[in-house]
Length: 503
Image (cartoon, rainbow, N blue to C red; front, side, top):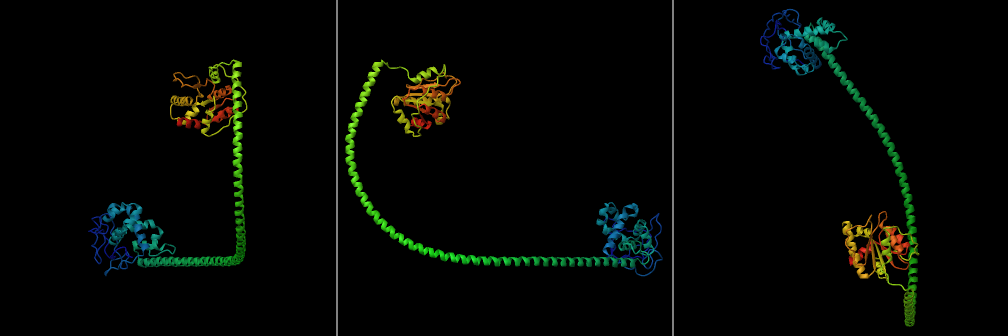
């Protein structure tokens, strides 16, 4: 394709145009109008007079008359190479030799000069022969032997046709159009070869894909044949299973018929058994009536015998009571002011009491809340309470002082109702001062330093005489097991808390 509009090669090349194209800085202002004749350039001082082009388009020879030949159609690679060569030498030209439209382009970076200023460079090369000659002189210097060969109108066989065409366009020796045409043919041949090679490559790829598809199809066909064989095998297995299921169904139906016959037989037997049971029930009822009559007679006899036993028991108790009165009179025993627990309370702060062997266990552990009332109803019962164990379980959100006060007050009510002896034990390194007086019948103890309330409770139980009912209230399993071995009745803290709530 042409760099720009056709240019008259036969114009005199004495200097730059009087009206420089693009003087206003517009890159496209340097292109002449189609068919317009450029004015004769004026010679610049200090430059040699340019040689007018020859009739065949070269820059050597005498001017000839006749219309100028049109610019040749340049292949795109050739046009790009011409612009690249011009852009490369453009910064090396003196500032006064660079056309005004290209002075701004000459300041671009090398990688942007040919890309952004290509159209302006092409227009100046076409419109300004003097500028082209100046560029050609520098390009030929850089081209070396290849430039000299192109000036002579020959092209080495090993040279790049694009490079030869670009130099030929700039130098324009004799036969330069043929060089450009040959370069275009070579470029087109390379393009055609590349197209052919691409077509061959695509054909090879299609053939490879087709071969791959055929291989995949063969593999898929093998898979389908294997799948078909597997399906046929499974179908055979399903048919065999179907025959077995049908055979099993027939056997199940036969068993169902036999079961129905047996069910009918058993129903007959059950009816007969029900009739026999009714008859037996009637006989049992008759025997029950006879037994009730005999029980009435026995009850009357037992009532008479019980009256005799009651008389004997009263006589025995009266004899025991008189014997006890006589024994108390004989032993001259006066009424005592202190109880066993009082001795423990007086002595445990001075020295630990010696362990006393207790009798065999005589109480049973129970979780029944009513058991506490039953035990407190026994004569001369002694209630021992693990204080903090009960208060922290029932009202642990209070302070310790409020817990003690509430528990002692409740125990005072129980002592007043039952008349029993009540002892409450608290943990404490030493006896606390400032406590309110305990209610009547309630004894308040604090364990001494180095001793726990559990140990003090066990000492109180060991101090009691065998045979006296002692009730210990604590949810501590060790305390319960310890007092049970000494014959006391251990109860949980919940039984006392419910008793206090009821009070």
